[in-house]
Image (cartoon, rainbow, N blue to C red):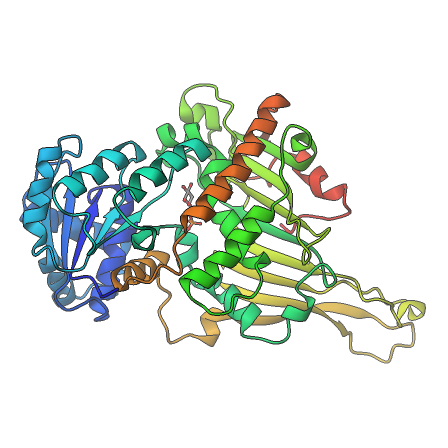
Length: 484
Ligand code: BG6
């Protein structure tokens, strides 16, 4: 695939465009990484001309990017690439305006759909009717790609009718995060970990995505989704797949995604028979975040609701490598801290030679932290200094790989910079393939059916806590404590 000469951005006035997409394209442009003649055609329903959109885009950049990075000449150069075309996606005839703005049909183009899922199908049909779905177009789709397996199959089928799979780029912005890619570097760029990265060496894995934010004005969407579909179906299952997958033969789109999908298909089903024992759901009540009072979910929403804002799961990857190793997942809104991390606890030493000298040995742990800071930390046992007259004391000490320090001279990019650039370059390695999304939904649907069959409703938890207390029970039954 060649580099794109034109990018078409649907949803160009939306929240994602303002917070992530425009700032990412600007970052790439300022660093000279965009193809020199790349034009960006922005489209949304609102009527405005190019100048008004440039003003809109500039204001978005000013909100999202530190002032010292916004050099006026670079901003101007970026804004010059933008044109704006107002399109009402429900009116097929309007797509011709886009074709006219996008230039010659034989040029490679990237189309990014950041619109409400309800507009997906008509947008794709509109693109095709205007000749914009030809062999030179590639299509990026933002989540949510459906709300269950059936709706996801329908979207995938509609897209597949017009675009071949190798031209479909399903976005999961977690795959654009530097530390997520670093997980692959850690696993497959070092000889040290892989021999222990299995049921012989690993006791259990915890994946936590904890957020302090609440609804953030997304009432309509979130209440119909909930934490399982909003976070686990996509981001957390992708993290799990990267932790658990076999080494791909090569870092390319086919090999990496082949290995991920095998993991997703090996997930032990959670359904009516085991949902109550393997999952806990919660919903936040009023509380305090960083000392400031915040309202409960139902108050924020303005009505009572049974939507979960917290979910904890005990998952298993039923294959040779991971036999018997629990993967505990949890995510929630309005929790005590913003913290996203993968935690791997290794097995105890086989035999402690220090036991008779009173030393307690903790198992080794590896913490891969994605947010708020990015770092990798290995916890190992070391001897406390001293003459040991009263016994030997061992203490857990961290071996830190602080990425911010190790790579102090490189700017931390937002995930979408990487993804937009890969889209423009036509590299789908960090995008999600159809079979992955469908395997993800299949597993998630089983859990939701299990909740329904067991009449499970969310346990309340105060905003600012670590979730409802039964979530502690989920791990404590196995003698495991969540890492807070
Ligand atoms: C989005 C979810 O996909 O990811 C949001 O819809 C969530 O609810 C967000 O807040 C989290 O992303 P990040 O990058 O802030 O961890």
